[in-house]
Image (cartoon, rainbow, N blue to C red; front, top):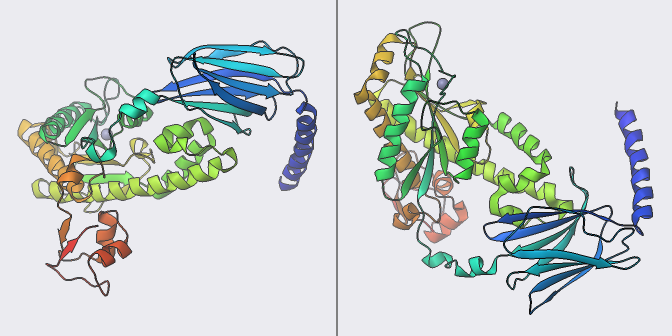
Length: 434
Ligand SMILES: [Zn+2]
């Protein structure tokens, strides 16, 4: 197989070279795609070869002109997909070997124009980024921007034609997870600086992938999926908390990276920085590794807080967070935990889980745990971060490196900020967090 591949890549390189040499003099604009977003419009020209281009802006009226050279054949505009409020019209003209494309704009913008080499499924591209000036300028600078809410996506497990596990008295898991999720959402929404988003609000089916999409769409800081456990015998009991397994995460990231069009979805705003296609995959991998690492640390820490709280009101099936490759946990970019609140197959726990009292206590425990987690490690732009005293009183079992990780600062920064001569800290010592 290896030999065969080698031959293939040699052959295809030769063919590629042949075609690029040939197409040097005969480039063609094949299609135009317009991708509007809340603060940027991206126009992509798909070309048959690497573009030779010049661009400049004109005003009164505002226009962007793209001059392409070595263009063969028809100079008419190809098919245009999408539209944007920023673009009034796109026109073209040309002579034998060149083509001029004019974008009539509704306002003055500072465009960025750059070429991209082929990455499947796309070929050669010329990208025009038009930032929405008004939107960008009306946005207050970070220092005076209101501190944001921490968003918790709450996923009530199962639903619709998927009942989940069924208890000995006939109760469905889907009908236990929803009231617990609703109770948790109510508590979170009462908490200043936190906001809950329900993934499922009624008794209907949602695909596992869609659940993480909802969380991602809401820019959730954490996804909490609520389930009840089941076993073939009635004895097993207690709660457990699951986090994404590293091995599964690594494969998922790899798979998503293969789909270039999903990079921006995975990377959020960071994708805008990654424009150099030669480095695109490498950079995407690096940035994703960082965000995945953050997700997994966050999920693990949150899971520990949840176990600590649940342990006060119910027995624990597993005292430590468990790693799994369960569907709802497979999103590497959103910290996700799955809480099994108890065993529905255990007749005693089934009765407990059915009671409104116990459901409320479970919701209160989860709320306390999540609040505590985000008090310890709030996202930088959140209200929690603003309110957090930048001090920490050392408790038993804590080390400098553990605190550095928890507060998302470097050990060096922590050491120098507190003028520590060594890494040893003592219980009760108050550290200032940089
Ligand atoms: Zn379940």
